[in-house]
Length: 358
Image (cartoon, rainbow, N blue to C red; front, side, top):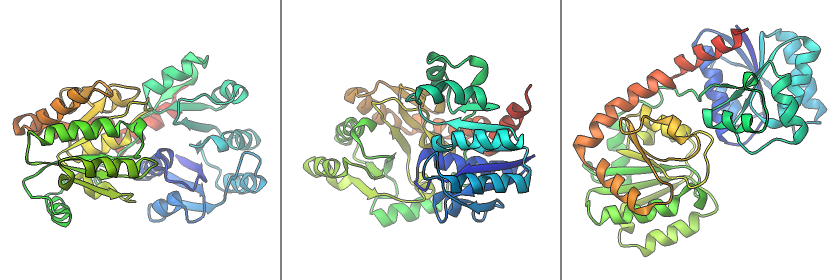
């Protein structure tokens, strides 16, 4: 099949990561993929060597005529089987180009906050395919009146090769961070914001560190609460076992360095790519039982689901995964779980199957 993806968002967001991963998955599956992208943005740079033909353009907003022109021209020249969009500001332009050229459009929605009243009603009905990225998100759309037949679920694809365990890489990273090679390392990869449960996690970690001397924590990310997190770490008794690395463009190597990943959100999450990527690298996940997070792991097999904000429960769960005979079987099961449910191979096949459905 021939696809034209349109994603001119210049920011590094979950939707942008999904856009790149899905486009790459379709190329790997043998399909022809082109993309209209923001010049020199995250998406363009990530797809530059992926076998995707790039058209550089921008939609500053839904009324940006230059974006319409570039998308219309690319679609007219390529004659794709499907247009694919990931960002709200491009929903209406893609629907219009779809109608003008007679090319079906598939749109993805990555958030659960409602669209405007008109868009919320019409977009899922006018797009030939409208996808949620989790069953949790799909249910939110149904509760707002979208008919069930108009919303399908397609999970985020994960590149198993990028996320594979690498003992040598682990050793290198631990050495660079000054962490002992036999340490048990918990990772937090994400936005540094109180809604992500970071302060619950910090308190639970310090409680666990008091009982487990091998336990270290690696914090990757940035956000408005970076300074407060740093101050609380420094005020604690185990500051030397917390390693805050800030924003890192490519987190994939760091999955190999962690023994487990924490996803402690106290606010609803639509999905949770970081959970799936960590498991692909063999790291079990401690996840909040909230929103779409439970769909990203197999509870008690590849990780544990925990009550959001419950410090004692998180402390005890961390200590449980510090036990080798608990953690290692989960590590083995985790990679297999992701390969069967979220690998690029599986998601590309599911995408094509859903596009071909009557």
